[in-house]
Length: 65
Image 1 (cartoon, rainbow, N blue to C red):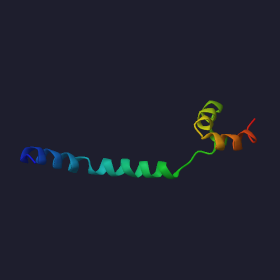
Image 2: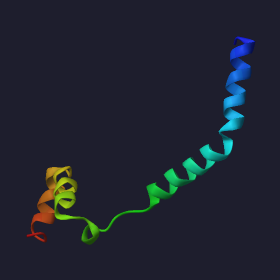
Image 3: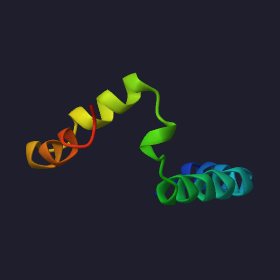
Image 4: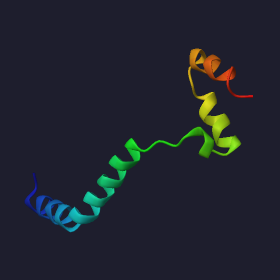
């Protein structure tokens, strides 16, 4: 690799280490947190429901009206 490019890349990595760690921690936290359907607005619930496979939708149709 070009030495100048390597130096610049390493500087960027060092400079962003703290903020990147915080960002990655937030991403991990977001992966584990889920939103219960009672907390969703009706529009959001409809979008979330629609993206389910058809076999899963039929399960919810019995409970959501």
